[in-house]
Length: 348
Image 1: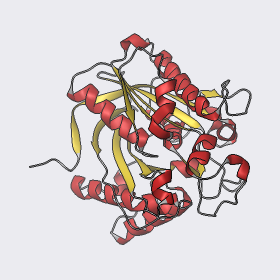
Image 2: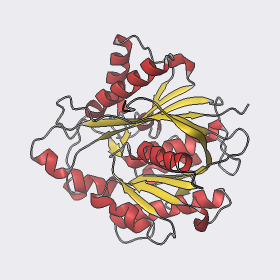
Image 3: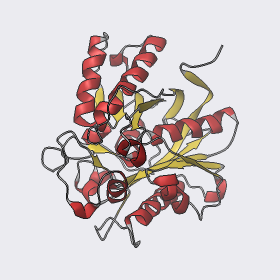
Image 4: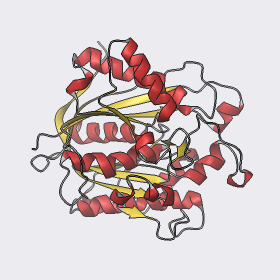
């Protein structure tokens, strides 16, 4: 029979390091002090001539930092799985061009980080490969003018709209890890879900049904309750999608309100800044996971320390709106996707 449920890795895959890059707005946010790399000139171009080129530079810096933290070189890495929001993933293509590493380009919209982790973990565990990298990024200005309007247009944003994060996250997965290091034990691939949403300014409503489908399938199959996890982390539903997810899960008999957080609501001070429903983009969940979550799971000490309760058992669920500029302008609906990665740490 086909395997369409939870996939348990043949052997766990450990996080050897994680690195985060953020722009000016992200540095001002609640997690800004935990970012590894920020743009010193605060123009979000990271020393390049364009926003599109800046996104590639962000990926380059994120992966370079992650490799250095792990005490490795690029020649030690067997493969890199990377993606972004630009057409044909050119941010990843150009940003990682100079690395001597086999490259797989991915597009899963805002779910790309989880997709990359799933494929990298499968490659490392199932094929018995060595260190493998997963990278994801987004850039506010590059994404806005590709998917919506030119930045100079200055269009009014709807209350349900989300702010594309200028950020990148890179992760190194190892076949063997340090004692207590977080590890991926299993995952659940998402299914494309279309509930008739076609509003470009309401990504949360488009993605929430996929998050509901994936989380409910995982809890039903595993037999676990939400409160048996330290954290259920979605990324990035924002305020609108978070409300929908929690309400529908509660109606299905699963109250997740006590353990659920959303990357889109963690990365910005949504009340103090004009970020409306919160953050979005491939870089949103990648930046939050690498900068603020994995350090609380005991990722090696070369990573920055983040205060808060130690996390031992989390579900990381990156969500994405599967669209293109052409599909939206032609009146098509926006299907959602949500991939789930189960991360555990046995340290104290």
